[in-house]
Image 1: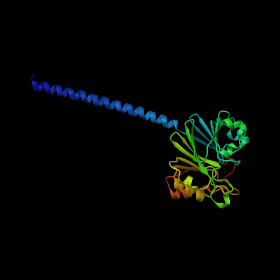
Image 2: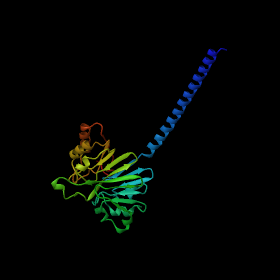
Image 3: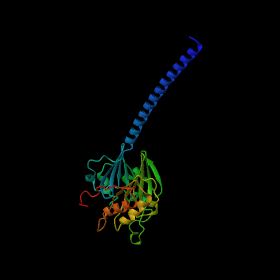
Image 4: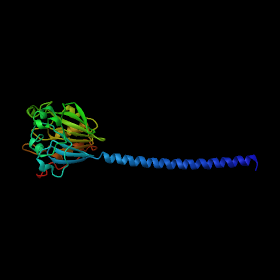
Length: 269
């Protein structure tokens, strides 16, 4: 065998070996991609949030091992079948948000309460060691959840007596990769309109206490949540037209999904 043939055979062998290595490398990449995909799926599963409406302003959120009660009212019967709370968020002092009788009926021994100062002053002394007090604009991380206190107040002159600025809190909860806003009792205030990167927004609309469906829709179109949940829409004497609210939001921005849950299971509306 002459030198030229030997050189040719060595080149062919090297190319063949290189191809095998490439194939092996491709296989390794595929396996790595599969592992990454599985990891991402597991992470996505970890960030799933279950939201259960109880009534009016009251809701239960579940994420991993955290159970969050929002404005618990309705007595223990309203929470039948629900797990005990690990976090309790209360927005204001009014009876449809703060109900001490309900709190006493529930098992809250292992729960942390997040409240504004006005609510803290109304709660019995037995809860004092469980309280985290947040003023408007402040935030706290608890159990892996970041809780921001957002102002909630009235703008219309005839409604100023209901909710003055600084007394109550709306809340933005960052849970996993989701930012969830509960408005509490408010109108379409600048602090709501300037919210950013909200995935789910629970927005009130009831007269004379909070705002009209038109004002609520205008605010939502300003801060552009991915989803908006009309809640707290029973007023006195009328119930707000949530179907009209959906029409207004749909007409203004088709990218915002309006999600209607049953906030009044004991009523026809």
